[in-house]
Image 1: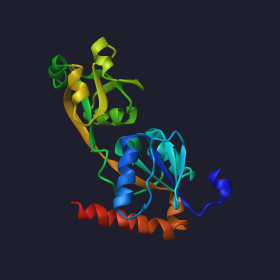
Image 2: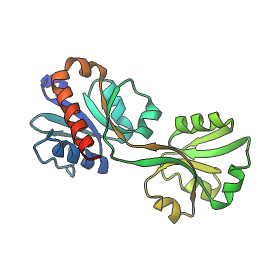
Image 3: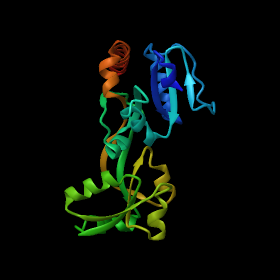
Image 4: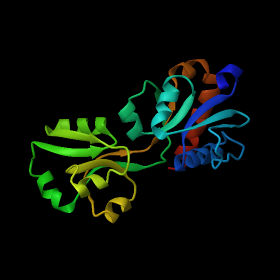
Amino acid sequence: MIRKLNSKKLTVALPKGRLFDQTIDIFSKAGILDEDINSSSRKLIIESDDFYFLLVRAKDVPTYVENGIADIGVAGDDVLIESDPDVYRPVDLKIGACSIVVAGLPESKDRYFSNPTSIKVSTKYPKVTKQFFGEKGIKVHIIELYGSVELAPLVGLSDYIVDIVETGRTLRENGLIVIEHIRKSSAKLIVNRVSYKTRKDKLFPIIDKLHKFLDKGE
């Protein structure tokens, strides 16, 4: 629909939920967006005066941007590491802050630090997991899950999990602990490479306003 209209508006791919609301808030405060955007709508495409907002799954944002369906999008480092899209990443929006960690039952901590040669890990992030343990020289059997990975160590599916945590509350409520931090993660503005060159008149002012707003908040 959007491409058939040949619209002059920018198309923005955003994840549903809190990151959508936080992004809209930053766009408003940075002077990029002058309208109220209702994220509670069931619409998958929300139109404003200057933008089309596509509401998609977090993992799908890079796909829409890399393939040119969206000019820009917002995705966390956890998603970007896994998909490794061919896009520009000009702005760290400093929202969606969390950590990617190794977690498990308290009694599994000693074994983890006793230099095991192989372990089983459940995760939504197989690429991050493989790279992290590969650098440690540990052979890892990855069990990819899409739901609540915290269940895996509780029922013996795996020794550990690799997941993102914000407050650690879910881990604590399920009797798990953080065993090792892998890296921090935050949301980035990503830009389609073709759009970056052909729509710079619209994109560069947005990037500039975001930088000025975020730098002011430091």
